[in-house]
Length: 224
Image (cartoon, rainbow, N blue to C red; front, side, top):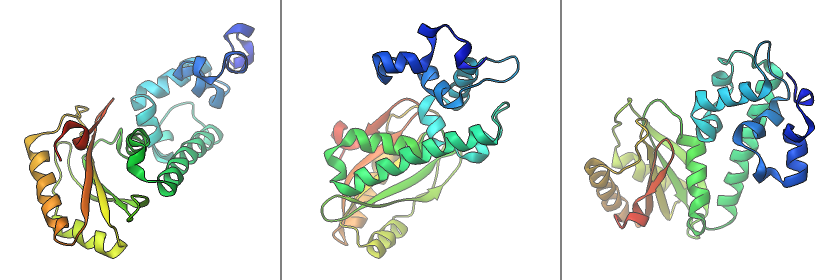
C-alpha cells in the first residue's frame, strides 16, 4: 500500500508539513523515504520491519548497502535512497566535528559513534584523532575482535597518533551484547592507553562505550 492510499490525516508527509518532523514516529519518517511497500506488506509495516531488523535508527544508520540488500522488498532504488540518506547523515556529523571542538558537543560525538559502531555483531576498537583545538582529524577503526572481546595494542595507537599529528584522542569501542556498562578490563585498558599516549604528549580526552541504546562516557562517569 503506498502512502497516498492512507487517509489524509494518517499520511506521514501531510502530518510532517502540518505538525513538523518531530511529530512523526520512526516508522513514519522511514516510510517517507520508502514511499511504497511490497506485495502483502504496507509501507509502514516495511519501515517498522526495517527498524526492528536493524535495532532502530542506530543499527540502520550503521548498515551498509550489502546489509540492506538482504532485506526482502528493498529493490535497488530503495536501497540507494536509504544508503544516500545514511551517508549524508554521517558526512554531516563528520563536518560538524571537524569544524568545532568535538567535546564541546558530546551529544554529537555519541551520535557519531552510534553511526559508526552501533549495530555491529562483533567488537571493534576505534579512535577519534583530534588536533590541538580538539577538532576531528579522522576516525579510525584500529582493532576488530569477536562477539565478546578484542585485543588492543597501545603501541599501534601511539604510532597512528604520531603519524596523524594528533594532540589528543577519544577512544571508543562497542559492546555487541548491547550493555554499555564499562568493565574492569575497559578501565584498565583506558589507563594503559592513557599512560602510553602521555609519553608522546597525546591526551586521552574520553573513552566511549557504544551499546544497543546508550553510549557511556568515561569522563562523565568520572573514570578518567
